[in-house]
Amino acid sequence: MPLVTTTRTGLVDQVIAQMRELVSSGEWPLGRRIPPEAELVTALGVGRNTVREAIRALAHAGLLEVRQGDGTFVRATSELSGAVRRLCGSELRRVLEVRRALEVESARLAATARTDEDVRDLETILDTRDAAVRERDREQAVAQDTRFHLRLVEASHNPVLIELYQGLSEAVLSSVASTFDAEGPADRHIGHTELLEAVRDGDPDRAVAEAGGFLEELLAQVGEDAASQSASRNA
Image (cartoon, rainbow, N blue to C red; front, side, top):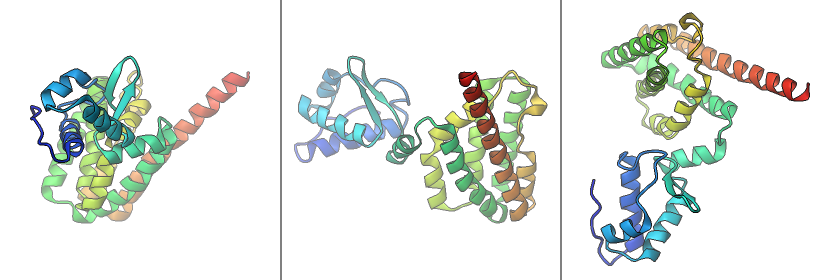
């Protein structure tokens, strides 16, 4: 998506809108440095102060991060995602607790609202995820696991819940990566077959139990790891 020269009215707002679109569309990928200020000034046809003000606004919203001497980087793909990152930071337990709140209710709704297409998509994604786990393909396993959870939320057909979860997607990806042990045997990885079956069978109570169960297991695992690290420091 090329940058276009702005008009004179509302220059900062126009620049912010263009930059936001470049971030949300993936044109400026998450974690990557955006073009330098001089390049933006030329492409947009505005002054340096306008570009700087737009960057400050997007940094305040959590989409960009200005690193002195290193440039400006994409920190989140939406204001909601940026807010989640500010609130949860890198603390895995907080992210898992938020996931539990959203995913359990999504599973309940999906069990009664899912369509045949939803089920087919979930089956395909889970098959790909499980194959990657068996092959110890960490990158693919993490990506497909994250995709499964998002697709399950979409099967709830609740637009507000879906948008909230999409805002959490980067934190979800990070939490999946943090809890995935690529070296462990495949049969020890937490599976989602029973969760999918509950949704496919239209059983909301079982879907809730399955969704809550694996997240409780992850939270317990995080707690054990934290206790072990604390004991090691104090030894």
